Image (cartoon, rainbow, N blue to C red):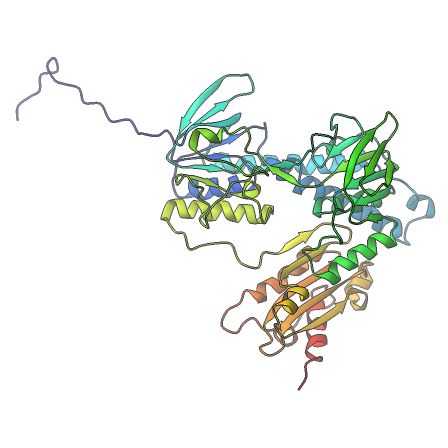
Length: 481
């Protein structure tokens, strides 16, 4: 074999890879996390960009986790005050918003730390900074100190979430005006608060502040609370709010907000004026797309800052995907994680058949909770589907009597002929947990979805799950022979 002369040999360099990473994920909320973890576990080189110091996105830092932690603290405080085991002087103690924020801050820290460990364990490169597109394969990352770098990948996933909608005519810099993000910086303990917007966020915070003893005015721009829920469940919340002294003003829209040093006055188009110590504006959200330089890749967000995607979560630019709040409905943390996971599968395998389950459960963390899965009575009636309804009142359950959580009920809607469960709706403490039992049976195939399951199985006693047996018997007894 002839030897090569090193002096005359031509060096052959190993070709450099065309891209630094296999995928770039913008955002570390549930959608970004779902995509990043699934891609990494398939041996893809993944880079994640997060503008905050800690991962978790709005879900961990401003939305889902903080509000649910606040709600839990207030709910336990209400139970404490109602318990006969404590002296009158103890039950009359007050809890402030600052008090419950301490618990929420602890939970936020634990969640951020836990999620940070996921990225480290899966060897995902994490960049801190603001992301913007240079072209369809290149993302510019501007760091907090003003420096920047460019990273490239054949796939980019936008998971930047959303933020509270802020009308330009409202001065959100005023110390008495808040949105659902900045309310977490509230230092005072308002005696009266008005909440504009009676959606999920507005209703949850109405519960929280009422539980702390504040007077609450809830301004609803629609005819009823949470109209997407089953009417009976929505009415139950309305009655509970009314019974606890929350003033609900339906079909109202603001004209302007008058801010003073000692109060805020909301002027409504109907001519009414509502005065309070502070205003929480919770009416709508906007997708975080305005700083991404979408024009560089030929994408355009709609008026709410949201992007259109196909069922594989591909945007109009085939190598750019989007998941989570930034694509709109259902705007749930639980769904966002699954969207990220499904998008990653589509990226890896080209599988565009997998999609979210049809019956996505809804959990609303008011006090008491509300939860729903499947069709409502109104939808079934409009579709002319013959159904029957079974109900269980919590006040009749031994477990609810033991724990003092007797407010609420469970409702099962099932087909009158096939007995297939079509919807489950729950109002009461732990509703968001209870609903999953019904969801599990609804998802069964080959005849497994049948209301008689709840009659023929044996439940632990006493439990709240027993409500399913009670409701099933109640409904089956209504059937005509």
